[in-house]
Image (cartoon, rainbow, N blue to C red; front, top):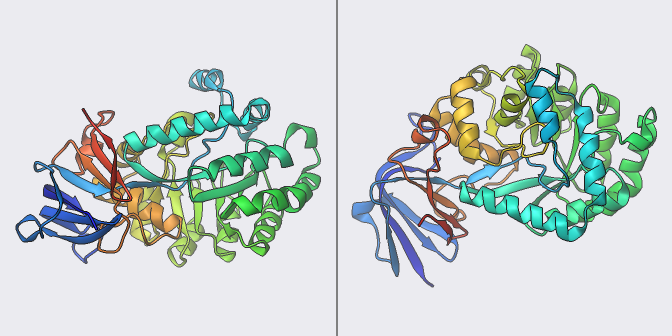
Length: 391
């Protein structure tokens, strides 16, 4: 067994929460890695011997980011749509259909190369775990391709055949739902862990969303949901009723929604890049956290409403525009994302957890928000292996 020690860590964010510090901060810390797992955490002065030693030089170390919401298997580009939106056009879910057309025409090799490019981007910015959704095929063959390709690069694959109603089913949403819960789900479920639905005006009704999620649950998939992005609705309550791991977006929430989330195990995943890119109002994270809701941050990397893969950028936006402290935002992007995926092996630096770590070119985690846009990730370890390093 080969061991590696990261020592002389100025600020170590463990996320082992205490009443006084939810981030479980250790100053002048050290972490011992063995066989891909964390085997010891403590003070540098107490660190055990190791086969290899990395001197952090007083810099900060945080858990690898857990991006629990992405749509990175797609073809085409929607830069023109973004440009029009910046000129004043309103965002609507219908733009997804243009990506569907490009994705259906793309080959497996083209899609695979693009996905791997995004994974490399994410690793370089400290993301060590990513969830990937389908949803840009919207026919049986293409949706099956998307979940199969996603499964090549992540354990966290979500079947999102119910993203929007495709053009060929316009005016026949119930018929399309029949396809999703039938032949499409039969083809996709073997490659996926999660079932998702876009419960929103312009996408799927509460009744249709229930059908999709219940059909997925019956096939052994775990539920999550898009809801509350374009306006208030009943999606959050449905998600909680069905035991969804997370409700994502939550831009428009009623007081009853917030209270129900706080009383449940369902995580509310905020997607700061979406509001930044669509000019919608930002959700009030302060309201959620103060009410006791478990909050995650994710990028929602997609070509239409949030074409960023940078968790540091999303942290900076959450701090500036959503009322979060830097510590809350970092925790939401790590332990919060892990909770949204119902994972206990990531998002925390503690013995027995996966050794997914990020060394920052900064003395504290605050610099992720304090220095927006600056590439502060110096080194990344995934399962104890150094996979990215500056210089």
